[in-house]
Image (tube, rainbow, N blue to C red):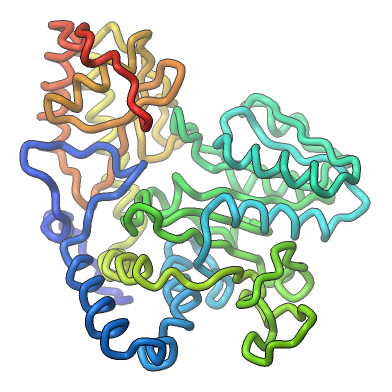
Length: 402
């Protein structure tokens, strides 16, 4: 990490492989390939795995990567050093965080979330509640009503900071403070925040935070998730998933579980070494940028996009907050035939994605998207919509991934 940050994002754009004739506005779903990643993975495969074989766990430092790389992500989310770890999937990390949080407030039974939360987070909460069978209640309310439901019955507030459909941005510090005032804990899912805006989990008071690394952080499909635990909880929280690598002495092979020291206890399975090599290549880029610069550029790009699309496409209705201070780094529009319209946009070179029932979603990552890209994207979307290019049978055929 350096104070000499890159502020000309044309330099970072050159660090990514971007397919010809494609404007990629889907980095909020899967980030593009850093050019250095292929060589990094190849080196990990041929030199480390190939030549070191099992000695790579020590010689190549594989075992330490989940914490050393996580500290680099920690800078991006405002975490204290030594309080993040990488591994497993985001759903697993949600389960870990929620189970640990509930254990810290054993006299309370209500988990509060909102209808804008990512469904997997809700599913994991439902599964945990069922398996514990202790009378927990999952309360799901509209995003704008969350604050009104924080009261003295609440155990855990569990929210995704940026709504995956609309980009609506929750006020993390305010809602966390309200939860704490009520005697509850707060878990934040940063899947659409990390790398998109300047998050500060430490000053924002988060008790736990989780997130993925394949979206804005460009770690590649299947890249590992991360979990953050605040210093005040780290030596008290009990891992519900007591995996071998979360043990205090994994290679002592003790018959019983003892939680590891600090964040090490939140490890579960074997580190995904090849995937971490890809993430390492992306973090080399992130180490050189400042999140405040990213956020400034993001607001400019999303505002340009909203202005352009609304002027050219009156049939599309803005679903994202109009105030940039209230949205993340994505813009969503509603359209009754949104799936077909998005497929037509993709076919004509603008890649976004669709979220049921009617959301056309576009993500903006200043690391590789610039104002010229936005101008070109608006022109293409305008042609698709005004000429009804989407109204063709081929664009209505639903694929497995939308």
